[in-house]
Image (cartoon, rainbow, N blue to C red):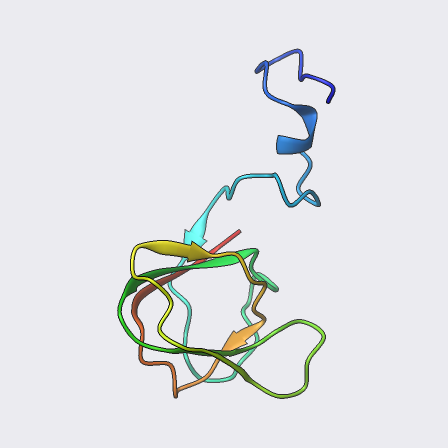
Length: 94
């Protein structure tokens, strides 16, 4: 894997289209079925217990993720979250 001359990290870490690229910012998402203003996120930090209900970029219906482990980033792209989401302390990461 090629290395970046500036940071010494693999170049793919700096490519925003790469799954290896780490998040660069996070926002608190709304849970109203409205598409996120920054576009689909690369993942969702789940701080507290509960279900995550949201729409993925290529879907037309919501998908439910049952009780993901609190404190983890759920590396799933979401374009919106639904009010049925019961997990707390959520952050959409980009």
